Image 1 (spheres, rainbow, N blue to C red):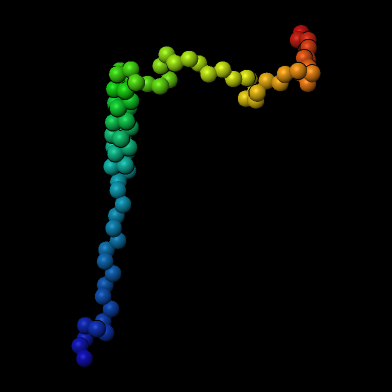
Image 2 (cartoon, rainbow, N blue to C red; image 1 turned 180 degrees about the vertical axis):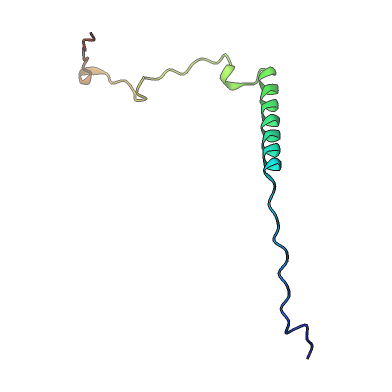
Length: 79
């Protein structure tokens, strides 16, 4: 028998995580890259929120307006 099979191997050293500076730098870099790509999209005129498409009309509460006898107007007095 050999002695290497019975002796426990030492644990490998615990891996240290990234430093806070590394995390902040990486996050800031990713944000700036994304912001630059969005700026190029706006400059090219391909921003959907700035397009000249016809606006979509909807009611204030998000439901279809009622028609016919079921509608009832409510008058409120303010001040």
